[in-house]
Structure formats: structure tokens, C-alpha cells
Image 1 (cartoon, one colour):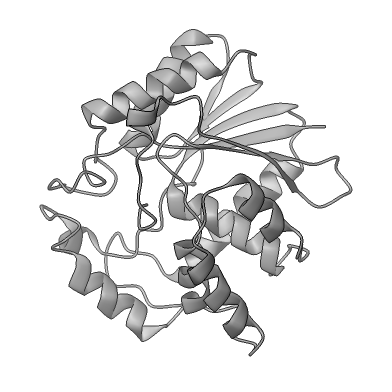
Image 2: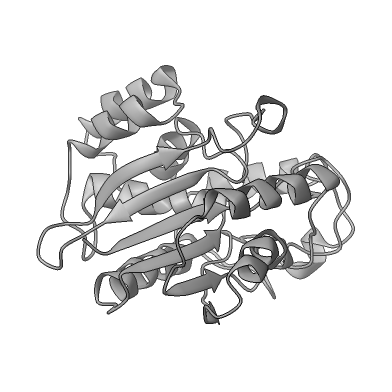
Amino acid sequence: MPEFWFIRHGESETNAGLRSDSDQSTRLTEKGQRQAEYVAEYLLEQPDLFVVSPYDRTRLTANPSMEKFPDVPVETWEIQEYSYLSHDQYSGTTSQERRKLSEDYFRSADPDLVLGDGGESFNQFISRVEDCFSRLRTSDHQKVILFGHGWFIRAGLWLLYSGQRSFKAQPELLDQVKNQMPTSRLALGMYHWLRKRKWHKNIHAFLLFSAGIQTPNCSILKFGHNGKSPIELIGYEINHLPPDLRKTTLRNR
């Protein structure tokens, strides 16, 4: 069965609450660099392809793995984080300083709202996720390793579970997630309650679903498909990291 693994980047300066010039140029902390080295140790078999986002923190996370397997081709795909703020709004700020801007953006619940240069709408973000999964489904590669971002990965899970656009709904997926990944039962319980009221396909539904699932820095989500059946979640891994490198919160990107 062809497999593709999503690996969330290591701890970034933004994750650590530090000031960033831009979302794209945010780099790894020392802790994030150590996490990336453990990922490389975990990868025992050479993949067919490495994929990184255009953001610095994913390539820095991928570097130890790419050095371990120097013959594997590397491609840059548009799998970067959901970047809804403009360059001007983001530049030189901390995540705490951006909180009010983020709250105002999501309060609007407008899936087509673009705040300015460098920002994107919710629909544009979801289209990127859909395009990535469609590309993987039709790939001839047997194993692809993608270094990506928290919200992007959780958006993929949301699309697979809820069945939107080109995705077929997989109600059983959430049971797999609960059995394999750290989750917030409160957030996911609220999501289910609202889903029954046909509220499950908008931006706030995604936020609630995303808040209920943890994707710690350098956690690995493994997906598989046989070309005919829907894409399946076949594994989740965090134990390749020592305990002191696993600490996370639910509200991370």
C-alpha cells in the first residue's frame, strides 16, 4: 500500500512565543533542531520523495533526514501553514500580540476574506489541502515524507472525516484519531453536538475540530491508500521523541 507521512515541523520561534519577521521566515529553536534530529533517526527506510513547504521551519526540520538520505529527491509544495494575516500584520510581532487580529479574523466567519498582501482566505487554504491530498492519491511513489504544519495536517483530517469537496466522509476516522492521537474530548464533543445541527462545514467548525486534536512538533501521521479505497490514517507516532521534547499544548500551529 502506498504511504505518505506528514511530519509537523519542530518547535519554531513562534511556538516558543518569540518575535517573528514573517510566518515564512520563522526558524527553529534549539529544541526544534533536536526534535528534527530524532525524526531522522526514526526514518530507517529510504523514501521515494521528500516534500517540504516553502517555509523555513519545515526545510530546517527536514535537513537531518535529507542529509541521511541524500539521494532522495526533494520537492517544494504549497503545503504551508494557514496564513490568514497579511505580511504587515505579522511582521515583527509575537503570537500574543497577534491574538486580537486573529480573533477578529475568525469572528467574521467569512471563508473568502483576505486581509491583505500575504494573507489568504479559508477557502484558499482548504483548496491547498485538497490539492495536496489529491496529488498524493495519484502519485506513483510508494512512500512520500512531507514536512508540514499543524493546521494543514488537521485540515486534512477534517476533510477526510467530514467529507467535503472531493473527499468521501469517513465517520470511523475520528475513532482512529481518538485511539491513536492525543485529543480533547470536550472540544470534539462540542464539535459533534454542533455537527448534528448542520454546522459542520464552515470555518468555526474547522476551528473546533482542530482544537480537539493535537499535532505536537515533529509528530508523525501516517496515511495509506490503495488507489481505490479512501485515504486512511494508518498510524501516529510521537514516541521517537524523548519525553522532554514532546511537551505540547492543544493550541499550536
